[in-house]
Image (cartoon, rainbow, N blue to C red):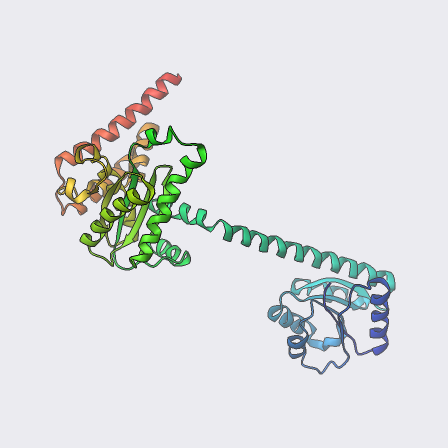
Length: 386
């Protein structure tokens, strides 16, 4: 029930209000009164902290509007029920934006007082219900914060978030410490399809969770700055900051492979991307790590494969914006040719800037062929639909 403060220079009116409250609203236990208009109201409110003020508009004097405004500004959760003469109606209506939820006319009739109080109690009940819903939502969010972390990391790896400050702020929000550059490695379970054939649904789904838990535990034990999270059923991805050297990270990857084998009896291969010094390039390192895993068919399984070893000369392909390439394909299919030209210039500029002004013909050919095949695929789908 709300805590009530009654303001009136007439002690008889206050007595009547208290009687009304006791008779009609017996659950309202906390009632304060004030009869001296010279009292510093803000100071009194700091001590009382009422939810509802019932007051004669004349109690505030000629500066009533300012007083009510100041109270509303300092104590926005405090609301008012005002009363005055019919001549005060417009004035009272003018302060409804400052927390006045209802008003009455003098002499106040019990029925009017009851109506206003019922309105106020419904108002506070809804406020309390809303507060409880929000608290429940926060508790539910806290229980599922790992899900939000994974959604955030997935967005960073895919390059959806392109703002450096937004990524770093989110890292801090989730409590992750990253210093220096960023390196991504991907852990993939070898022969996953064969393994899951002999497992139940629960055991199948928990494999990546076990790996993820083990890797994060080892990261913490080794005092690395980083975090691992589940990407798919058979894949765990990890972002490490550049507080350690490449050799240390590579050694850690090798130890992780052995640790997973010994602890979980699972064989895994790791793809390791290059280190970059912008958070927005985490997506580049991720694409490199994913591509490095493709070489496990040549390099063998159960090892760590750095992209720098298998593609030492290719430092620009993975910096290409996949989002821009997708836009280019869509623009070409829909006939937005001017936009195609704009996107091509931006993409070629990315290639050129990344390669010191010179673009390898082999890589350029690869990009062009991928794009043309994608556009051709769309055209075939359209023809089949027709």
